[in-house]
Amino acid sequence: DDFTRCRLSQQKERTLGIIKPDACGKVGQILDAIFQSGFKITKLKMCQLTRNEAFEFYQEHQGKTFFDGLISFMTSGPIVAFELMGVDAINKWREVIGPTDSCEARKGAPVSLRARFGKDNQQNACHGSDSLASAAREIEFFFPSVAAVRQNTAKLCECTCCV
Ligand code: GDP
Ligand code: MG
Image 1 (tube, rainbow, N blue to C red):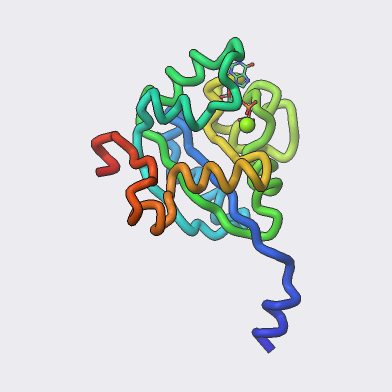
Image 2: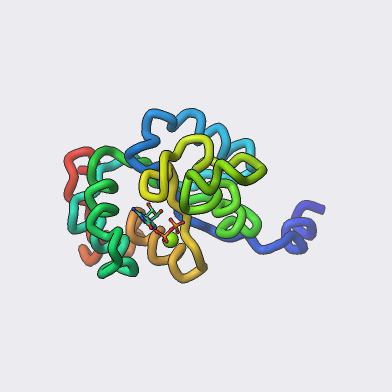
């Protein structure tokens, strides 16, 4: 029955994806690819990151040569952030978006979102969490839990489109 089938099915996983500022004109095509790939979109919002928010989101890259450029790029326009759910969603979404460098991505097969919609190794159209720990942190960053919002300990987006 459905209950047994559900209990026997593989564990579902959540991951955090972003359509970056360079690809916001392609939201329709990217959401279509997400649907075709079999993910459930369980949360989604459009917003524009402040520099402080981008700094916090990409804290692991602080000190790297590309950090300043990355912050400027990620705050340059609206983004669409979403939570995806599915079996092995973290790895699967990273496969759908493809390698970090869009130029490299264009050499690969199957054709990935970064190959289709990205430009280079910075303007690469999409983000995907790279581990269970970063998925948890990044989902909480964009979609703070109800408890955190109630206790007013959630970091709320400062941008005008999120209030
Ligand atoms: P990702 O997990 O595939 O997104 O790659 P990383 O976590 O290593 O880097 C985060 C983001 O920083 C990438 O998606 C790019 O937008 C940018 N980035 C990474 N490496 C480089 C680089 O070598 N040069 C530049 N300009 N940007 C980079
Ligand atoms: Mg990364």
